[in-house]
Length: 98
View 1 (cartoon, one colour):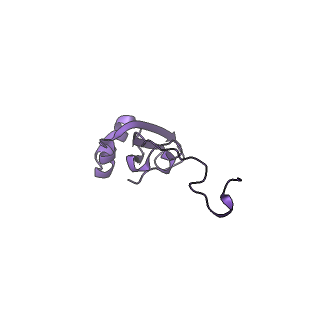
View 2 (spheres, rainbow, N blue to C red; view 1 turned 45 degrees about the horizontal axis):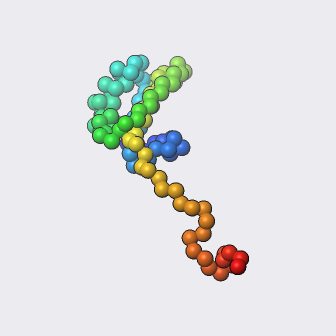
View 3 (cartoon, rainbow, N blue to C red; view 1 turned 60 degrees about the vertical axis):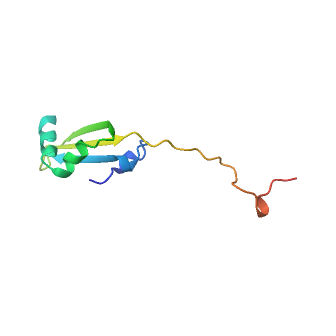
């Protein structure tokens, strides 16, 4: 599965995130059983780096599957190094006044 785009705004590292989607399951047990039966989805469930999990259910009786599940698994984000907003070096017109 590809890393979820929704994980970026949450501060999660997409290299350590995955999502499982499923339709037509009417309980968490059914959804997880379906994901375990799929090698790609099962690999996401077993991601060793995963420490964060989020699950959502949307229901719409007017659709074919009537119930839609989304599961996001993610590892801890890498520590980010903050860089000064100032210039890295002085050149041309960006030199400070003397």
